[in-house]
Image (cartoon, rainbow, N blue to C red; front, side, top):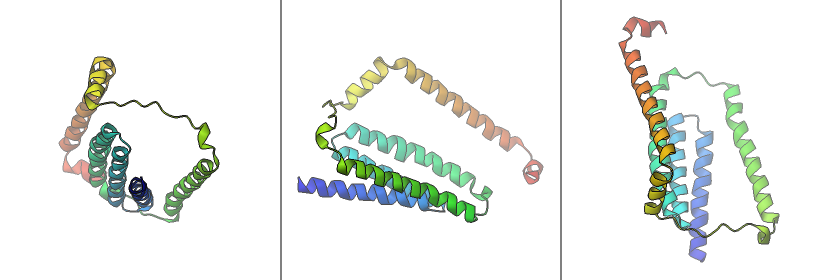
Length: 175
């Protein structure tokens, strides 16, 4: 049990440090890289706590898909940033300080709360096969709606990208 606790707290420390670094970095690419580390450590924590499906979804969806999308967007609009001034520094550190204060408040609540009054979650094990069957058998309509929304977004992105490329070089120089 002591090894489990050590690994748990090490992973939690990695999550806290990498998330803190993601919040405080001025370079957006570095911030996204630290956020990917945070997501991967969160997936390790899910796996350690006995939820391998959540760990796999965390890696595939967040660390894999969404962060790659963020990196592409950041790299595409890299040259369009503005100069950072004192207001930017205040806007950077104020959320970090507020989040730290909120974390200290929650830690105080957990330290002084009676663990006997906490609600225990039901012990339900969901295998990936059962999850997939329930998703596509019982919730097929929301899945179809989500897939149609993603298809419309993809078509819109292609249209906007094609429309931007069809403009002449003179249009790009004006803006």
